[in-house]
Amino acid sequence: MVDIIDAYISDDGGFAELDSIDEQKILLCAMKAVFPIIIEKELTQKQSLCLRLYCIHHKSQAEIARQLKLSQPTVSRHIKTAKHIINKYLNYCYFAVKKSNEQWLKIY
Image (cartoon, rainbow, N blue to C red; front, side, top):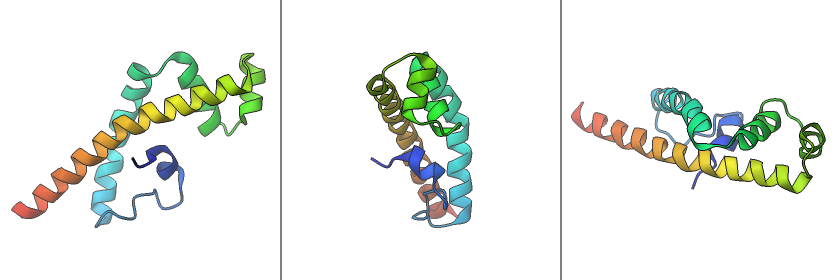
């Protein structure tokens, strides 16, 4: 399974294996549409908060633990679980877009 979150954060978007820039744009557009739904519907509040603080605000697990009054291992578990859930669903999205692009190219 591709770690979509880490790929998304990387310099090249992590999707260099796609055949064209258009495919990358389509995939990123699809993932951006699905991502907030996954966060809202599939993650607990703690998982979502820990992941946001870690990925968006670049806080360390120790900082998050102090801020939320949790242990560092608990924060680590929330982040790991959240990433696993998001990656699972975004990999489905990735697969669907890749297959759709392949079909589109066969037709045209």
